[in-house]
Image 1 (cartoon, one colour):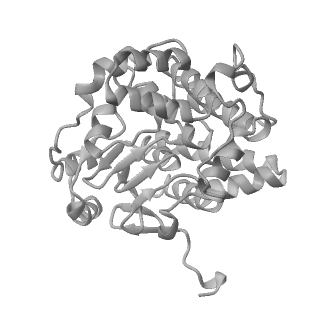
Image 2 (tube, rainbow, N blue to C red):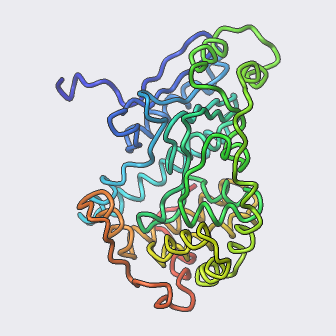
Length: 353
C-alpha cells in the first residue's frame, strides 16, 4: 500500500448520536504522533456544535490496546537532531487535546481496553466516562525512560488514595481494570465481549437519562483490586520526603515486595524520580487540570532541552535496546541538594495555554 493510499491513523465517523474516534495505528498499539493529535482535535472541534453528535466515543483499533503512549522514537529523533521547537509543538498540541477532552461540552466516553499508557492516559483519564475491561493495563511508565509523568497524569496521580500517586508515578507500575477504578483512573468495568453492544446502545438507544445510565447496563463488578491490602506499607514508605528516604523506608520494611521496589527505584533515573515526586505532590495541591498540565509542560521541556536522561532512557529502552541506561548522575546519592529546581523553574519559550 502506498503512503497516499494508507488508512488514516485516526478514524472519525458518526453512528446515530455517536461521534466515534478510533486510533488506527494498531501496529504500534496506537502510539500518538502529532498528526493523530491534530486529527483528534479537529474532529472534536467539528463536533462541538454539531447537534447530530450527542456523545463522543474514543477507542483503539486492534486487540492490543487503546494507546501505548506518545511516539517517543520520534521524540528522541527530534531532540538528537536539535529541533526543540518540534518537541514543544507536540507537547503543546497534546496537552491542549487533554484539556479539550476534560472540558468538552458533550459527554466523552473513553474505552481503555488493553494497553493504555502515557499518552493513552491523557486521552482516557480525563474523559467524562472512563471504561476499563478485563484486558486493561494502565500505567504512567515515564520514569522507565528517564522522564516524568505528563498528559495530566500528575493530576490523576495526585488524587489517588493515600500515597499510591507517588508509588505509581515513581515505579511506573501497571494497573488492572479493577486497580484503575480503585485509584480513580476509571469509572466502569465492562467485559470486552460487550463493547460492541455498548457502542451500539450509545449510538442508537433513545434514553433521555444520558450515557452514564446506558453504560451502567453493561457495567459488571470485576475481581477486587489487590491494592488496598498494600496501602499501609505503600503509604508509610512513599510519604517520605525524598526519594532517598523512600528507598530507606522500603529497605527497612524487610519484605520481598518492598525490597523489589527499592531495587527498581535504584535502577531508574535519579533525576526523573526526584522531578516526578515533586510533580505529583505539586499537582495534589493545584486547583485544576490545566494548572497541572502547565507544571508538566515546564518539566517535560526541561528534560527535552536541558537534561540528558530522557534521550539516554529512550536510547536504552527503545532504540539500541541494551537496557543499560547511563544516567547523569548515576545514583541518588550523587544528586544535588535540590535536583528538581531546574525543572520546576523552567520557563518554556512559548506558553502552553
